[in-house]
Length: 154
Image (tube, rainbow, N blue to C red; front, side, top):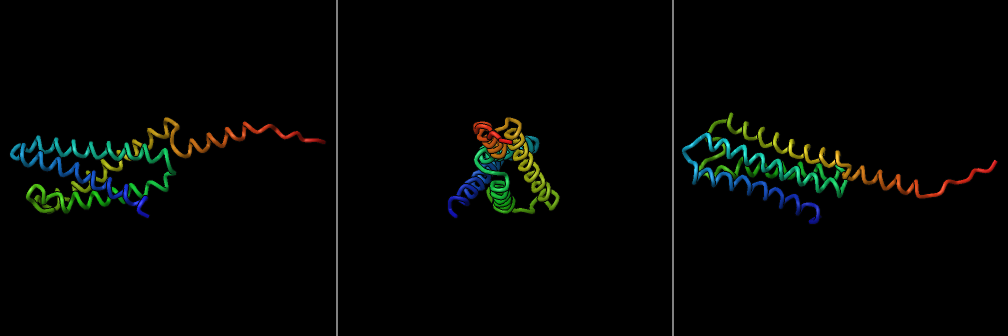
């Protein structure tokens, strides 16, 4: 049980750490410039997408999609909850300090970039033919071709 959920927890904490770093940079360096804050937010979402795409690429090589997709969904959900409800305390706010629109905007951006990163990582893996299913089909074809043909007598 620990082998399966430890990577999920570590990845969720790493994604939350990306958010904390972005919030601290915004708070201490660019507290008054809203344009830079928006760019840092987009950069944070891009980093999250790249991390999740890389994880989908690596996990997709080792196991089938139905095994790791649930793990990544749990990771994204845990990191989203931490980012939405715990993250604002880092910058001295609370979850709804900018209103419900900003709250839900952050939820949709997080989910969109996360899903986009995962899909791009897996599509790249599949396009290269390195995914679990392609490799198992390749091994199956090699074993079938390596056996000699049976002679049929009439």
